[in-house]
Length: 218
Image (tube, rainbow, N blue to C red; front, top):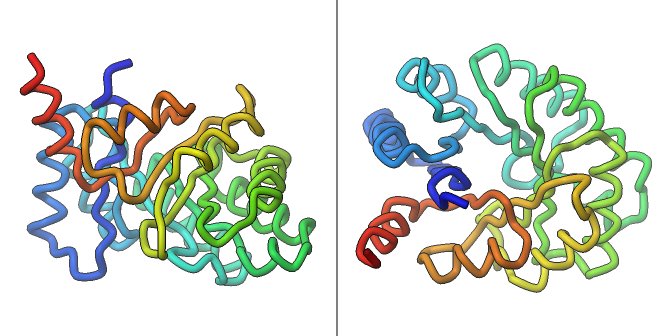
């Protein structure tokens, strides 16, 4: 597995500027990362820079809390696709999940999947807020709702990706969905541990550092 092709090169800070988004895209082109992951406002700008390349544009929906209405999440998704997004990372409704309102959680994801019009949808679970039982439920619901990936974290909460959570997610979804590890992956060693645990995509803001570490091994 070429590690660059599993990296979503990420910049989701609220203060990210046009100059920084342009730099992110240029780095993604230099290292041929799988995608750039950016806030919705910057999708059309990034798409223009990355057109006719292998680098995808990924954006976030219901971010970072997941507590928007389903209609708003679907609208955000539709807008993102219209602006050129190739992938959607949506935040699950954590409160509904913890309250056991699983049909509403499924409907929330399903509407985003529908609005994505066949584009890849990754469901962010925010694992640091969930019990193991809730993580399993969230994975199963994501599969039934038609998502493509389950993802550990937004990177905006108390903890990011943990090896045990990635393993649990992978064991739950098997080969039916893929797993994205995100949050706190800042070096090559951690990136490899996440991949060994079953992740097939990494959401990282330290993509350049990871690639430089890899280069220095040879």
